[in-house]
Amino acid sequence: MLNALFLLAALAAPQEKVFDDWAVACDNVKRCEATALQAPEQFGDEPAQVLISREPGPAGALAISIDPGEGKRGAITLLIDGKPVVEGVVTDNYRISGAPAEQLARRMAAGHWLELRQGGKVAARVSLAGISAMLRHVDATQGRAGTVTAIVATGTAAAVTVPVAASLPVVPALRTARGAPESPSKAVLGELARLGDCDLSLVSGDLPVERYRLDAKATLVLLPCGSGAYNFNTAAFVLRGGAGVPAEFDVPPDWIEGDGPAILTNSGFSTVDGAMLTSSAKGRGLGDCGTSQSWVWDGSRFRLIEARTLGECRGSVSWLTVFRAMPAWR
Image (cartoon, rainbow, N blue to C red; front, side, top):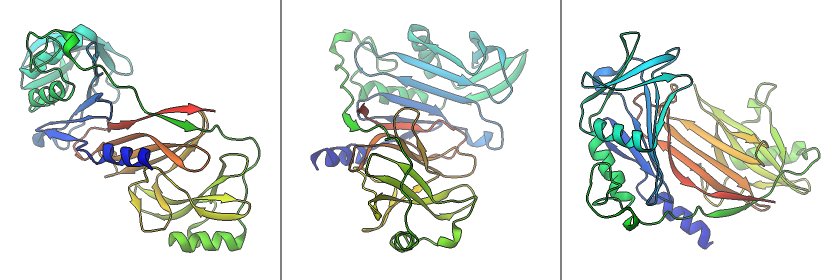
């Protein structure tokens, strides 16, 4: 119970801040991520994707990832207010880290526009409005203000005065058991649909009832429960010995009503890295805003290990991490 209250308190804290054309979030161990947003005058243009991240602690590394857009690969020149600052090559994206990234971040903080050129032509433009305030916020959140490690709120205090990075919380996690998942009877399926206020007529070959073995006794049942243009909802249940109950979560999805089941959006279940259940709700079809969560199964309930959010629908597909935990697989 205390662990659940701790998680809820961490997630209830301010998660995302917007400074003009930049959004930033720092997670429960103060790792920070920021993403560029389209300026109002750029609406309708294909946006470049720029993500800045910084690890906590005295030696916390800063990294900048830049993707100028689909099909824009090869040699690239970065300019700030018309002055060339960096040259590189884009394969999947262009990434710079360490001291060069810190230097670039400081120059960006003093500029107005970041321009990406390829073959002498402008590939993309990124507004730098608000980036200085955003970086100052990161300096303050990570305890860097007034130290030599700060990007904007610089000072003379030594790096050792920056707070040491906290460890990620550890949660127990079970790997999936072998064997076929249990199937609910027609009567049980009807009861689950009633509990979730779901329409069984939605169930079809394209929208099946999904079943996944969780452990030797438990099966996850995901029941189709409504859809829109770009979001599809499922109600989550756990089946044991033929009886089904709403799945329990230490931190539930965004949508749960009373004693009813949790409603997941665009849910997924993967066993690649253990057993992981995901929910990802888009704010609009472009996927440039929304929320997502990932959970692992501990034998009795699902435990949150990651949460991301981006409230501003302004071109960025980099949802910002606000919570992380480390699964201890067994």
